[in-house]
Length: 311
Image (tube, rainbow, N blue to C red; front, side, top):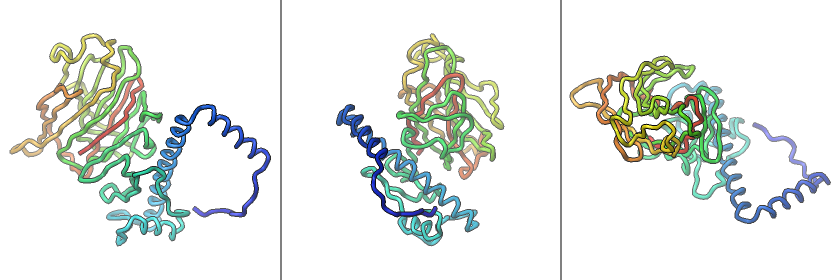
């Protein structure tokens, strides 16, 4: 990206009117809300900067015909990596985060830029605060929105690389409306096609079914449940589909481990708000860690996804 003219000029009358109007609005909403507005502006600026960095890097990799290995081979400093993009003409200037305690880092494993304040990819961990990211940065199907609390979707699927054979997934999510339909699912041991059709397993917070179920999925389509837990099997789950329990934010946790002395087989445990719902669900998996994804899907009702942690 190349800059245009930098010729200085004074304010026009219209610009002065706009400045005075905005100043009046800000004075009317009060200092605390003004400070909140400024913080959101810094957050949005950093989100845009990360997208610009990753877009410029993708174009740089295509231009250099880099298909495997590190895009910035031989460069070990992040500022030097950005400078390489500038020197190559794909970035106008080096960009720095606007928020305190944040840092733009090149993540070797995923080969992309991250903001370490919101996505920690250290010590083999990934932590995503979705209110501060953009759905367009992920593999997705369907319509995804973004509000101040996270990603939202009524019907859609979104996937994130999870290059691990054993892992723990934690997710904060909530259904929006108190009706008898809708739900969300968490994908595990999943592979994707180029058009984001998934094959693997999903554990579903399924209000329509009245409980927690596990399904196999093949090419983006799901089979009948292979396991179901309702209020009959676990009293933590309410019998009424209109109970407020269904719409309060839930802390979901999934632990997937390989079964010792049983090659190609794994087991999964599942918790909601630290209450174990499923223990020792065994399944056969041939997914290689390098091709593995996790993620989530929504149906019939809007779901808010606020935070995801993979380790």
